[in-house]
Length: 349
Image 1 (cartoon, one colour):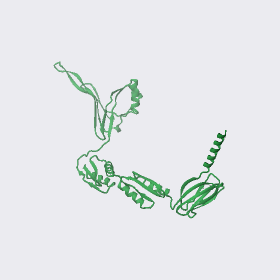
Image 2 (cartoon, helix red, strand yellow):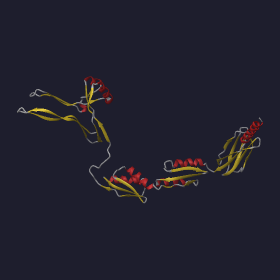
Image 3 (cartoon, one colour):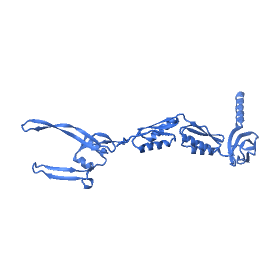
Image 4 (cartoon, helix red, strand yellow):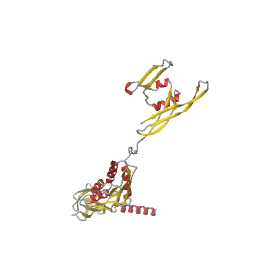
């Protein structure tokens, strides 16, 4: 029992000593910008090292101290409780201007500059890292020139020339133009198909550097190659029953304003009726309905060819086979005449 009781007293004593231990911290203030500090204990004596740097006013009932920074410098604030024990030791640094506000302003000015970091060290703002574009380096230097509290530690990236050349070539967007960097200069090489293309390439390069050597050669051609969008066309040749046509909401529009032409005649020699002309039809929600009615057996897909074609150019879809038809000659002999049977479609999307 004695040893346990002694241990309990020892732990309680340690807790009491720890709870009254001095709390050390540091804060910064800005001249003529008061700040309120609140405490969790009942305050006794309060001492400040240099009242000319920071003065204070204590409100012991509300457990708070109002600090009044007067001049730039560093001093200490010591706060005691009612038992006379030191509870707080705060190192106060006073700056003539708010460094956090300066940090925010610099970050906003250089928000789109790649490869750098911006941080605060005491009352100074440090810009560090590797800059890719020379224009970005010039921009940083202009920002630094506005304040002696901004320090520029940035340097040009060793890969700057290669990266700029790649960016310029990408922005020019012409496969026939090659951009490379030699001793800080951008060289534009290759063949272009007009004088305007040569001027355009140089103007884009000037956005990145003022040291441009344009050795592009102009080769006039009637139709210069271009990157046209490629369109994939899928044709559905479908055989449908009458019930399918009714339920499918397929509408024929044989009206003159869409270019419909019709003719009907009787051949008096052969006795056959001839019908020639064109009709225009439209179908709504083709593929979902087509798949549904095909599953019911009232629609049959004869051909389903696909072709890719450049925008504005013509493509031909041919799908089918050759079928031989028996032809009886005058002498009674029979021969085969082959004809192309299937789908033939010309498309110019």
